[in-house]
View: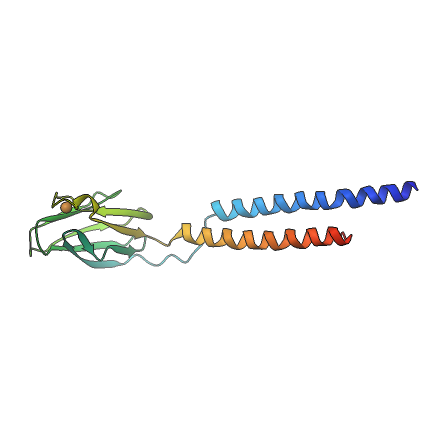
Length: 171
Ligand SMILES: [Cu+2]
C-alpha cells in the first residue's frame, strides 16, 4: 500500500517537475536567441554609390540597404523644389537645388535601422518626407523568426507532455 502511494506521488510530481524543466529550458533558449550574437557571415565592406531622387514629398528609393562598414556615396538630386536629406544617427546632410545633383559620402559604421528625412522645409507634407536606411542584416527580424520557431516547438512539446500525463505515461 505504501509503495502504491509513493508511485502515485511520483506520478503526480513528475509531470510538474518536467514541466518546470521544460519551462526553464525554453526560457534559456529564448534568452540565447535574444542576446547571443548570431555569427552571420559579414560581407566585406565595399564602396557603394546610391542615387536618391527627392520629389515633394518623397524619396526614391525610400529604403536603402547597406552593409556595416560600407563607404556609401549618396548622389542626391531634387526634381522640383529645394530638398535636403539628413540621416538620423549619422552626421550626414545634403541639400539639392532643383536639378542640381550633389554627392556626399559616409561610412556606415553603426548597424541598425535609421530614418533619413528632408532637411529643408519644402511644403505642408515636409514632415512626412521620410526614408529608411538599413545598415547590416536585419537581426531583429532573424531573432523574431527564431523566437517564433521556439514558441511553436514549445507548444508542441507541452501538448505532447499533457497528452502523456493524461494517458499516464510519464517518461
Ligand atoms: Cu522637405
